[in-house]
Image 1 (cartoon, rainbow, N blue to C red):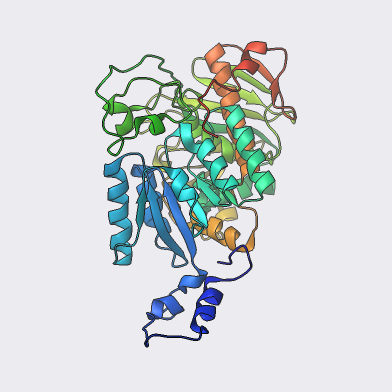
Image 2 (cartoon, rainbow, N blue to C red):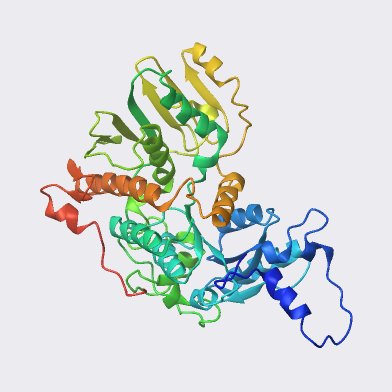
Amino acid sequence: MKTRGGLTRRDLLASSVAAPVIAAPWFVPSAALGRDGKTAASERITLGVIGVGPRCTYDLRSILKHSDVQCAAICDVQASRREAAKKLVDAHYGNSDCAVHRDFHELLGRRDIDAVLIATGDRWHAPASILAARAGKDVYSEKPCGLTIGWCQALDDTIRATRRVFQAGTQRRSLPNFQAAVRLAHSGKLGKVHTLYASVYTPGVKTDWLPSEPTPPRDVVDWDRWLGPAPWRPYNSAYVKGGWRGYWDFDSGCRLLDWGAHTVDLCQWANRADDTLPVEYEPSATNITARYANGVKLVLDFLKTPFGERPGWVQSLGTCPVRFVGDEGWVEVGDSGGIEVNPASLRSELKDLEIKPTTGLDVAAHSRNFLDCIRSRGVTAANSSVMRRSHIACHAAALSWLLNRKLRLDPVKEEFIGDDEANSLRSLPSRNVL
């Protein structure tokens, strides 16, 4: 990668070799020079990781397989998690070079870090991404990327202002079966598309506090940093073990964005609506129905048992299913990597797509797209503008459920029409972390 002065690390190495004094001959491993199929060290994208947990570990294992990436630093507020991630990275490279940090500001202050993977809890995704972009880093952020409408707006605004490369972790945009379903919706072979179905968790919210426990030493768990922008509350070990999900202060959109960040995003894409939003949201006991200005209906279908039986969906297609319905047929896809169509004659439209079964959790192609865009300075598949619209649509739907009434939204101003209470919930009070 080039430095801000336009030099690559290889240039810097060459200039040091040209110095007048060389103490002794030295050996450069072939991997450092780009031999044996390796990417030269001077051309690798240097990665820092902020926030370690099960999803981060999955992401990181996949990203480490890209030969043009070097993971140089790990940051987490929990000592056990940062040490586990360091062990994973060091084992991959066969050395002990990966640094660890408790405070991600230290990681962002390192000039050798080109890009960051942010996989904290929801509350930190947007603030950490904003601070990373301001520090000159490109950002891959796990979803949901913003805890509120306001955070999603601020994140997109920052990415645009700093001109950083951003990829939301909505990796299904880069998977072949989901891509094929969207292409079929765009092709006209379904007829006029009139209804889009996005599976989501049944919404819910908890506002109580878990019982207070003794706060560990900061080097073991930095509780204040873990809370970040969230209002202060007493420490409880269940939170830092992943038990924060479902709580109003920590989770996104009454849990609706856990799947909705993926499935609504795909419906937006199928409707060619990446630059707009549904204008109306109406909750019921089993779903939230949204409508676009072009008349297309978006149904967010509540799944009471998302990992078990899912009534109304093709069970064999697995989790996170979406369905696009037109006047002449429909297509449905899910995480199994498969695809179903009706009528059966539509299958002939898929025969040349070479769809390879790929789990919906796979980030290989999505992270590859991110890395390629870092090099080209191009626009990623799930860039900040795409994220902004799909996430705001989810948040608007969640607020309609929370308030239990129909909401109308101006898709340009991103404001609710004639509803001060709904507008007041576009942002929430937070501690200052920026």
